[in-house]
Length: 235
Image 1 (cartoon, rainbow, N blue to C red):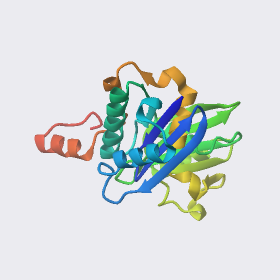
Image 2: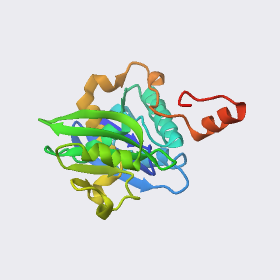
Image 3: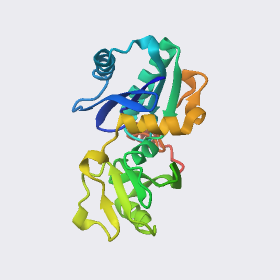
Image 4: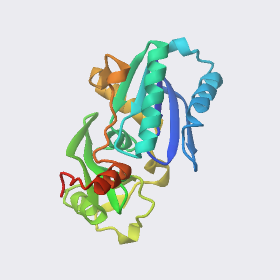
């Protein structure tokens, strides 16, 4: 089965094609002005380069969050449209769980991070054991200090992945390390492997039913509520 995977949850737009579990091609582009204009041409070029016809695609896998609100909407709506048009499966996976597949090594704690704005991060903790990715701490919005404390509390060495550009190795507590730069950023191949590992748990019967996982509300929503004098559930 041909599988098309994509991730637009962060500052990169990454797509990949797999034949069964074999990676055939992957492309990652850093986009300064957003991903809306570039995602479909990137997918079309990927299919053309691999000489794969649209009707050969058996499944589309997409990262569903948390991450950039705009990026998630672009990726999810594109994946939904393609799955509907091509009549194939749609598979949704968590952005942080997919990031953990960048470094599927036993004996480590994997701590993916995505920018949650205002100095905060989306974070979850995972462990790869006996060929399976285990979530040991669920996704939450935390400060930098809280993220490091959660990782440092684990007995095994912890590796930080994702949007960690503002962190410096020399500033990290003992036992916490930055993943190699090539493994830090979101990768569509990791989305694909996370989707394959989840199997039918990742699939939706109707593409329209797959929803983004935002974790928190957008800044625009919070601003509107403040202007309307509405208190959030956190206040």
